[in-house]
Length: 192
Ligand SMILES: [Zn+2]
Ligand SMILES: [Zn+2]
Image 1: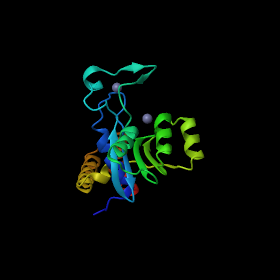
Image 2: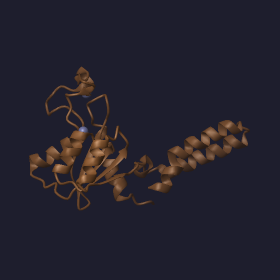
Image 3: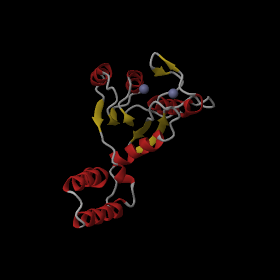
Image 4: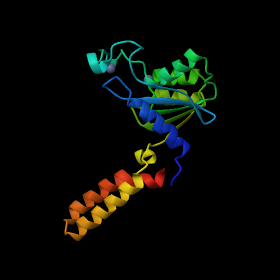
Protein backbone atom coordinates (compact mmCIF):
# COMPACT_ATOMS: atom_id res chain seq x y z
CA UNK A 1 0.00 0.00 0.00
CA UNK A 2 1.31 3.44 -0.96
CA UNK A 3 1.13 5.90 1.91
CA UNK A 4 -0.22 9.24 0.71
CA UNK A 5 2.30 12.12 0.85
CA UNK A 6 1.52 15.24 2.89
CA UNK A 7 1.40 17.33 -0.30
CA UNK A 8 -1.17 15.00 -1.89
CA UNK A 9 -3.14 14.80 1.36
CA UNK A 10 -3.51 18.58 1.73
CA UNK A 11 -4.05 19.06 -2.02
CA UNK A 12 -6.77 16.39 -1.92
CA UNK A 13 -8.48 18.33 0.89
CA UNK A 14 -8.49 21.48 -1.27
CA UNK A 15 -9.95 19.55 -4.20
CA UNK A 16 -12.62 18.13 -1.93
CA UNK A 17 -13.47 21.64 -0.72
CA UNK A 18 -13.69 22.85 -4.33
CA UNK A 19 -16.58 20.42 -4.81
CA UNK A 20 -18.54 22.61 -2.34
CA UNK A 21 -18.10 25.72 -4.51
CA UNK A 22 -21.32 27.52 -5.40
CA UNK A 23 -19.98 29.62 -8.29
CA UNK A 24 -20.23 28.18 -11.78
CA UNK A 25 -17.30 30.11 -13.18
CA UNK A 26 -14.55 28.19 -11.37
CA UNK A 27 -14.53 25.75 -8.43
CA UNK A 28 -11.63 26.57 -6.11
CA UNK A 29 -10.58 25.08 -2.77
CA UNK A 30 -7.97 26.24 -0.23
CA UNK A 31 -6.52 24.55 2.85
CA UNK A 32 -4.39 26.35 5.43
CA UNK A 33 -1.85 24.15 7.16
CA UNK A 34 0.45 24.72 10.12
CA UNK A 35 2.92 22.14 11.42
CA UNK A 36 1.33 19.52 9.13
CA UNK A 37 -2.11 20.16 10.64
CA UNK A 38 -5.09 21.54 8.76
CA UNK A 39 -6.14 24.72 10.57
CA UNK A 40 -8.73 26.04 8.08
CA UNK A 41 -10.33 25.46 4.71
CA UNK A 42 -12.45 27.37 2.24
CA UNK A 43 -14.07 27.30 -1.15
CA UNK A 44 -15.36 30.08 -3.37
CA UNK A 45 -18.95 30.86 -2.56
CA UNK A 46 -21.40 33.51 -1.36
CA UNK A 47 -21.39 34.95 2.15
CA UNK A 48 -23.11 32.65 4.68
CA UNK A 49 -26.86 32.68 4.14
CA UNK A 50 -26.59 34.50 0.81
CA UNK A 51 -28.05 33.36 -2.51
CA UNK A 52 -25.87 31.08 -4.62
CA UNK A 53 -24.60 31.63 -8.16
CA UNK A 54 -25.63 28.06 -8.98
CA UNK A 55 -29.25 29.04 -8.15
CA UNK A 56 -29.43 32.67 -9.30
CA UNK A 57 -26.62 32.91 -11.85
CA UNK A 58 -23.37 34.79 -11.32
CA UNK A 59 -23.34 38.51 -10.51
CA UNK A 60 -20.80 39.59 -13.08
CA UNK A 61 -19.22 43.04 -13.17
CA UNK A 62 -16.20 43.78 -15.40
CA UNK A 63 -15.79 40.09 -16.14
CA UNK A 64 -15.70 39.04 -12.47
CA UNK A 65 -18.36 37.42 -10.33
CA UNK A 66 -18.66 39.81 -7.37
CA UNK A 67 -21.02 37.61 -5.34
CA UNK A 68 -18.43 35.13 -4.17
CA UNK A 69 -15.64 35.28 -1.64
CA UNK A 70 -12.59 33.46 -2.95
CA UNK A 71 -11.52 30.17 -1.38
CA UNK A 72 -8.24 31.55 0.00
CA UNK A 73 -10.04 34.52 1.52
CA UNK A 74 -12.69 32.25 3.08
CA UNK A 75 -9.99 30.09 4.64
CA UNK A 76 -8.18 33.15 6.04
CA UNK A 77 -11.44 34.63 7.34
CA UNK A 78 -12.24 31.36 9.07
CA UNK A 79 -8.97 31.81 10.97
CA UNK A 80 -9.94 35.41 11.82
CA UNK A 81 -13.39 34.34 12.97
CA UNK A 82 -12.09 31.64 15.30
CA UNK A 83 -8.88 33.35 16.37
CA UNK A 84 -6.41 30.97 14.73
CA UNK A 85 -2.91 32.26 14.02
CA UNK A 86 -1.88 32.21 10.33
CA UNK A 87 1.68 33.51 10.79
CA UNK A 88 4.15 31.01 9.35
CA UNK A 89 1.40 28.78 7.94
CA UNK A 90 1.16 27.25 4.47
CA UNK A 91 -1.71 27.26 2.02
CA UNK A 92 -2.68 24.58 -0.51
CA UNK A 93 -4.89 25.85 -3.33
CA UNK A 94 -6.41 24.19 -6.37
CA UNK A 95 -5.61 27.25 -8.54
CA UNK A 96 -2.96 29.96 -8.57
CA UNK A 97 -4.27 32.79 -6.35
CA UNK A 98 -5.58 36.06 -7.83
CA UNK A 99 -3.88 39.37 -6.98
CA UNK A 100 -6.35 40.17 -4.17
CA UNK A 101 -5.91 36.79 -2.48
CA UNK A 102 -2.16 37.01 -3.04
CA UNK A 103 -2.03 40.25 -1.02
CA UNK A 104 -4.21 38.78 1.75
CA UNK A 105 -2.07 35.63 1.90
CA UNK A 106 1.13 37.68 2.26
CA UNK A 107 -0.42 40.03 4.83
CA UNK A 108 -1.64 37.07 6.90
CA UNK A 109 1.97 35.87 7.22
CA UNK A 110 1.58 32.71 5.13
CA UNK A 111 5.07 31.52 4.16
CA UNK A 112 4.36 28.95 1.43
CA UNK A 113 1.79 28.65 -1.34
CA UNK A 114 1.28 25.31 -3.07
CA UNK A 115 -1.03 25.37 -6.08
CA UNK A 116 -2.21 22.55 -8.36
CA UNK A 117 -3.33 24.38 -11.51
CA UNK A 118 -2.10 27.47 -13.28
CA UNK A 119 -4.84 30.07 -13.43
CA UNK A 120 -4.02 33.35 -15.18
CA UNK A 121 -0.91 33.52 -12.90
CA UNK A 122 -0.84 37.31 -12.68
CA UNK A 123 2.73 38.69 -13.00
CA UNK A 124 2.02 41.19 -10.19
CA UNK A 125 1.00 38.36 -7.84
CA UNK A 126 4.18 36.45 -8.76
CA UNK A 127 6.24 39.60 -8.10
CA UNK A 128 4.54 40.30 -4.76
CA UNK A 129 5.07 36.75 -3.54
CA UNK A 130 8.74 36.99 -4.52
CA UNK A 131 9.19 40.35 -2.78
CA UNK A 132 7.59 39.01 0.38
CA UNK A 133 9.79 35.91 0.34
CA UNK A 134 6.79 33.58 0.05
CA UNK A 135 7.71 30.16 -1.32
CA UNK A 136 5.43 29.39 -4.30
CA UNK A 137 5.40 25.92 -5.80
CA UNK A 138 3.19 23.99 -8.20
CA UNK A 139 2.08 20.65 -6.76
CA UNK A 140 0.03 18.62 -9.22
CA UNK A 141 -2.83 16.66 -7.71
CA UNK A 142 -3.26 13.00 -8.64
CA UNK A 143 -6.71 11.65 -8.01
CA UNK A 144 -5.33 8.12 -7.83
CA UNK A 145 -3.58 9.21 -4.60
CA UNK A 146 -6.92 9.16 -2.80
CA UNK A 147 -8.41 6.18 -4.62
CA UNK A 148 -8.34 3.08 -2.37
CA UNK A 149 -8.91 0.90 -5.43
CA UNK A 150 -6.45 2.58 -7.81
CA UNK A 151 -4.31 -0.56 -8.03
CA UNK A 152 -7.26 -2.89 -8.70
CA UNK A 153 -8.58 -0.49 -11.34
CA UNK A 154 -5.24 -0.12 -13.09
CA UNK A 155 -4.66 -3.90 -13.04
CA UNK A 156 -8.13 -4.42 -14.50
CA UNK A 157 -7.54 -1.87 -17.25
CA UNK A 158 -4.17 -3.50 -18.03
CA UNK A 159 -5.94 -6.85 -18.50
CA UNK A 160 -8.55 -5.27 -20.77
CA UNK A 161 -5.83 -3.58 -22.83
CA UNK A 162 -3.96 -6.86 -23.26
CA UNK A 163 -7.21 -8.54 -24.31
CA UNK A 164 -8.02 -5.77 -26.80
CA UNK A 165 -4.55 -6.14 -28.34
CA UNK A 166 -4.86 -9.94 -28.51
CA UNK A 167 -8.21 -9.52 -30.26
CA UNK A 168 -6.60 -7.52 -33.06
CA UNK A 169 -7.52 -3.95 -32.11
CA UNK A 170 -5.97 -1.43 -34.54
CA UNK A 171 -2.55 -0.11 -33.38
CA UNK A 172 -3.80 3.51 -33.49
CA UNK A 173 -6.74 2.65 -31.27
CA UNK A 174 -4.45 0.71 -28.92
CA UNK A 175 -2.19 3.78 -28.71
CA UNK A 176 -5.17 5.90 -27.80
CA UNK A 177 -6.32 3.43 -25.12
CA UNK A 178 -2.79 3.21 -23.72
CA UNK A 179 -2.44 6.98 -23.45
CA UNK A 180 -5.83 7.29 -21.81
CA UNK A 181 -4.96 4.58 -19.28
CA UNK A 182 -1.59 6.17 -18.52
CA UNK A 183 -3.29 9.49 -17.91
CA UNK A 184 -5.69 7.82 -15.50
CA UNK A 185 -3.38 5.52 -13.58
CA UNK A 186 0.20 4.93 -14.50
CA UNK A 187 1.56 8.48 -14.73
CA UNK A 188 0.02 9.30 -11.37
CA UNK A 189 1.38 6.20 -9.65
CA UNK A 190 4.94 7.32 -10.22
CA UNK A 191 4.51 10.85 -9.02
CA UNK A 192 2.49 10.38 -5.85
ZN1 LIG B 1 -20.53 33.38 -9.41
ZN1 LIG C 1 -8.70 35.21 -5.23
